[in-house]
Image (cartoon, rainbow, N blue to C red; front, side, top):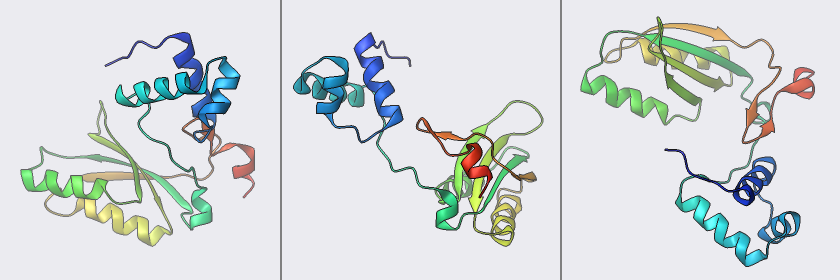
Length: 161
């Protein structure tokens, strides 16, 4: 559900998208409010679910995750056991996003792995019983733009690595 945000809330969120660790005092200076007023607004934005967390954005290649792929998966309605296995797989750190989609496929899944062999093992988990999904995997050759929390992970610097 959409939350009504005033101009000051939008400015706070905009600053945090660019740098999630910006101190409340610095935000206060930039938008013309007191630090306690900014702290109150931050707390309200968290309560409303507008701000869902703060995280470090780490270069995946620095962690050895060199392979990015998208897995399109489709199949018949899964059993309760299949759904449990599917939810368990979504908890794996290699799986970054899972979307239910319209069209020929049921799911669109973004993954990052250390190797093609590791990617293959992961895809085999989707095709194995009890999920028994048919998959089509697309391996990313080059990323031109990838934004996480307002931070561009792709771009020209990443393309030259």
